[in-house]
Length: 310
Ligand code: FAD
Image (cartoon, rainbow, N blue to C red; front, side, top):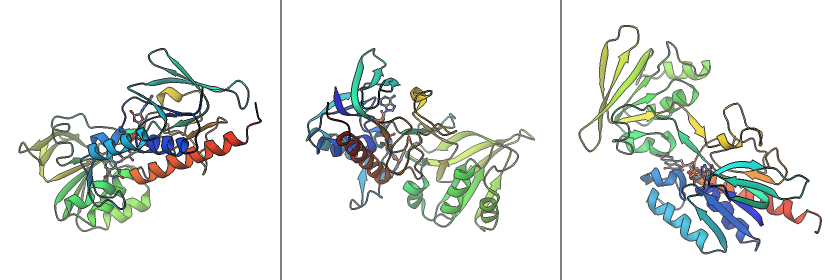
């Protein structure tokens, strides 16, 4: 059995494994895809102290750093079920999709999240070539250019306000007949001179020149008229879905499916901690996920040293 078993191999999971292993305790890490979302990222310019890197390079760095320590890495393994210990301080079980079962005194959940996609032609082709999901990450790449934000919930409207300060023009496209963001955000958005708001609109296609985005098409849901908008960037803000389906019924989740954690990274189950995009912690970013994963590992260690001697 492990002392610490980390589920997830993104920035949060890698940081958790390194922090745990540095305590000299038995550490395991199971991940469906080591590297996580970072593998899908191109330019990264907000990884503090590294002015510019690229996702695959950072992912390789994460893996190398973890491998420098005595961590039992189980890549390409998907966790399917978490079974709490029968008694406090007992072993927690994680069942894998392949039928195997792992046991550990503590578990750190770091399964991250995925951006909901529009699923329209061109979206995949132009991902990282104009189609973006993270305004904090990619906003500055569109300085002085024209962009659209897809989605009029809080995250879409926040993104549009944020981007309006950087880019030349923002078109916000909402499927519903009205925006769903908080009124205060909507008022702020409406006050900005370089923002156009389009409601009752279904985005139907992303256009490009083979290398980068050149525009999008949407259908007016009232008239069925099809409109084209010429632009250089599209920020898709229709939801970030935590990878926590497998935890339903075990760990307490928020209404959005995020793992509820306290300020130490503790979950509702004793001995189970969590960090990164899978949790209720706001602002889904690499540096934040690393901090959260590290914190969860230190909390797990703190928990372990308080267990009664066996
Ligand atoms: P993830 O990176 O999502 O990793 C989750 C890990 O858990 C993966 O290894 C996954 O395979 C594994 N996993 C999931 N489910 C299971 C399961 N059931 N069993 C086992 N393993 C499982 N942030 C920045 O700070 N700067 C940027 O420039 C930036 N750009 C981005 C660009 C894109 C296109 C995207 C998608 C995100 C970007 N982000 C950026 C956000 C950043 O990637 C995330 O905040 C960060 O990766 C979260 O780390 P995490 O470890 O919590 O989760």
